[in-house]
Length: 255
Image 1 (cartoon, helix red, strand yellow):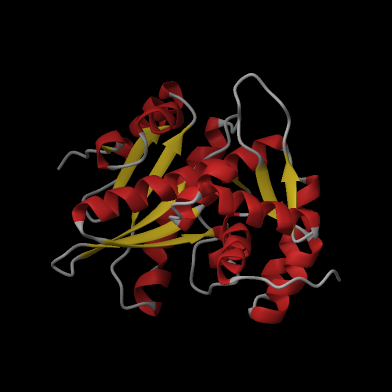
Image 2 (cartoon, one colour; image 1 turned 90 degrees about the vertical axis):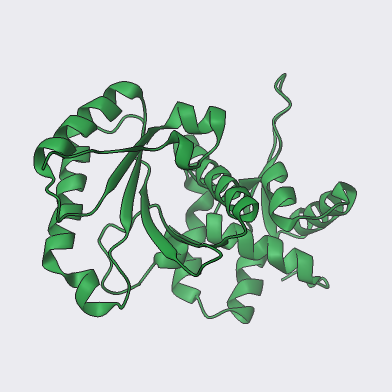
């Protein structure tokens, strides 16, 4: 293993990539809230040169930033410093991940940044857990959601959410099955019996308006007043406007 002195900020970079799996340079810079971009470039270059990070960059007309994931030495370093060996095993597969999966991870990173900015503007506190964070957690719906997050406002009121981001090419019947899974999970009282927290509301970001309308109809016909709230949005809308309450449509039910 190539041994270099890792700063606190470089450790934070490794931890962020452990959490999100793939992030681009602009996302990392924003998450670090560092006012000197040149330093972040230097940290990233040093980590990449010493195989703590993998970097993917192609010259393009859109000037897209480089994309990073954990390298072999980054995994070894984190294994020594955090108790998450089983979770780290998943990062060994980064080199084989599809472009679709990488874009999925980048999208989740953008959602986190939007939520972080929204919470800050309201004086609220955000806790955000990715699939990596949720791995191995008991009493949680399986497969796990793409994210689980909680926002605590200034009065101490906390709202909790499960976030689902279906693949762009996911068939509607698979999505309907996932919705049914949530309803069965709610009815089983698995969450309610094993946590002291109210059941989270569910947000689904659909690939397009057609899928969103279809899912709205399905949910409206299946939900009753005693079941959890569902909110829908489309991926293009979130990409254009960011992620926040203004892009979410609550599924209204009769009765």
